[in-house]
Length: 258
Image 1 (cartoon, rainbow, N blue to C red):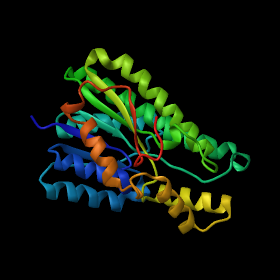
Image 2: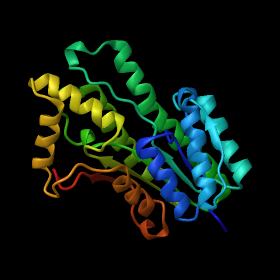
Image 3: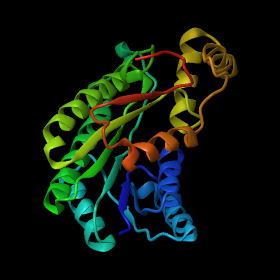
């Protein structure tokens, strides 16, 4: 039986790479993003179909409970089941804590923390009803282990994802549902660019200088690529990871360790 996956925030960057990798692994893959990214999302759906897998695209805001519940149900109804959910959608801003407003804080937590919670919860409800187990995977970050200047609020959301992932793993293990998270370091995406720009301003350097500093600090000697993250998610979504749960795994070229 062909399994079905859902990837949120899949229109670009890491989400797109994960969706395409899961399709190459043989899953039918539903993809989600917000209205502003609808044209890019449609292209990802088409790329999945070109690989030979079924796909649907769903516009939904992961911070809204009713939207997430409806999205999960739509995937199961249209593609036959819900076996793998990757709660990838996330946002970032580059601000010092003293410059972070309550509105900034609430928006980051709405998407990065509440959004992951809702995706975990609604996915688990369907997987429990199906009775066949499942794989739930969330987007964490190196910032969920080690904060840096200008992303304090973002870091707080990712520490929350780590705790949520552990709690969910314990509660849903009896249903044969594993819950894990991936923690990218500096990856060449829009969020990675924003982070480097913020650090450059904080340290009075150019963005290129900051990027070079990161490369020097990474034992493997390069900035990460979305496919590096997708490879880990491919493993976490497979049977090869059946005895792994509650883990938040760093993908950072060895820059630091958990």
